[in-house]
View (spheres, one colour):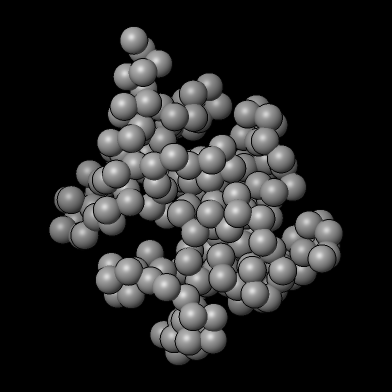
Length: 197
């Protein structure tokens, strides 16, 4: 298997050629933010950088590219993911990382797969990519500065705050909420209660 640094360079070149400049800058923002969080929380920086560079690999795929990837790699999507590139792109990117680039590390693949919805029992790498995606420097939404500050001190509380913003936005926009997000939010509410007991 190739070295993670070599894979990173290869994927960086690829996404730069297929993404808009704005999307590419977002991805690099997630890479840099995840590296900082990895340092703080004692996580493997190279694994976080690989997960981050892949996380939006399929975000700008056409419908044909989505269908081709699903068929070629037998990607399993639930009913909500099938109807939304916002949800399906993460699962597609994880399969591409595995099948095209030989990445089999479960932490990396899960971090890519669940960076949009999150889930209960996330590993630290999963938490880092989930949070970095929401707080990278290009993100601008009400309350983002508070989430950024919290992320570097208490990642679990930052995750809860992200869910509050995201779920409120989805409710106000009449969008569906993925069950993984609801379950994860409940899980992190309980985790924070345990800490405060």
